[in-house]
Length: 111
Image 1: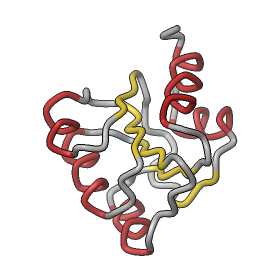
Image 2 (image 1 turned 60 degrees about the vertical axis):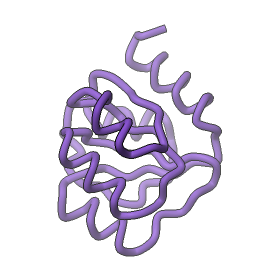
Image 3 (image 1 turned 30 degrees about the horizontal axis):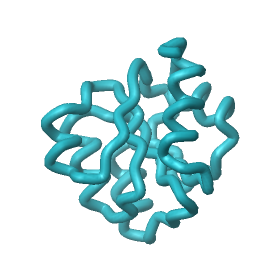
């Protein structure tokens, strides 16, 4: 599934389009960025509440094409700028991380 397909299906707010053709094959839920670096797989959607540019740096490092900010967190301008420059799609939702993860897993056929 592409980031574009995922974005359309979830209908979350898009803060940064990034590379909408990026492939998504998995998801990882985490707020401790060192844990994300050590455990998230390439092509994962990163589902988090960490709304800062370091989240983008970690996603870029491990090859996550999409970040979903949950619980109504808003991305600050420097995070949006970093996502755009790194080709990462940045989505925002009022959904909890659990609900977002369930929705993504359903779309990816993981449930």
